[in-house]
Length: 353
Image 1: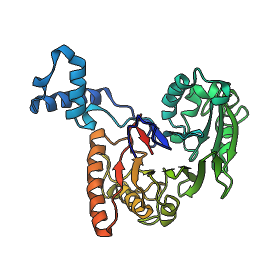
Image 2: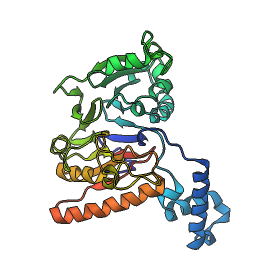
Image 3: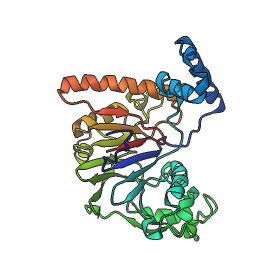
Image 4: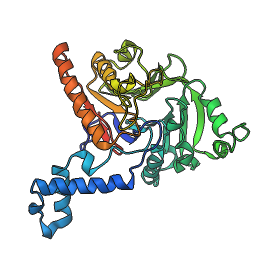
């Protein structure tokens, strides 16, 4: 798997538009200011400012920032909720419509602007119907364009739930949101996935797996020409290693699992950030350490941890990543098994498989 690929040497292209969990969490103004202060202090302490080329100031500073600052200082993991774009040679797929789908739509408008209608097609896969995975849908302008065409799939109650949320005659109309379902002209069909029946489009195969989450949820596996990517957010493992999920993800090139809680936070032994300790058992999420065990059991090449807790700072996320990488090395030695690559995907990250 590569984050950058200019040779088109890939079968599955994954782009993350939202990886925060529960609720959108934009950076506060004070956090942006602190990042600037931290960045300048780091560059001054390490003597890098003396290397600035004043004749090529912007490119010189950009190079310095890229080479000498940690990710948590120079960027952010982002605060939009779940949305992942996947492209194969056969189709474009959008998994979940959290607030990240708004930026997906803005980008899509420019990509599809000069395409004929027959090429402006895609699939929407909803993992489940909780707001953080759904509430960007009515804000995505691409879904209102009648020239676009999307088929939407989800769990068995997806059609009824969407009508309940956004339908013209729903009892909840105007209480939760204006009745916009009939205005979303680009979504041509809404249907559940059939049990044990994968969706096949050319050389691309899409299969699903039921997850343990309040109200039910689906994981999705995208396979194309021997490569595979699994999206399995919002799942609470009942054991340290989930053999069922591991079998579904077997030998995947990349799997996206829960990254909301550490084990100590899940058990209520510690709080998140400055928060007080709370037991989170039964909330529908798996501690990251257990996700790592499942990734090992699946023999996955790469583990992407998403659905980050919205209270988690960028630097805390970076520190957790270092902890998990160390933990993975220990597991690799004890299991005599290859260690998966581990990362927290950030918004606008591209992964080529």
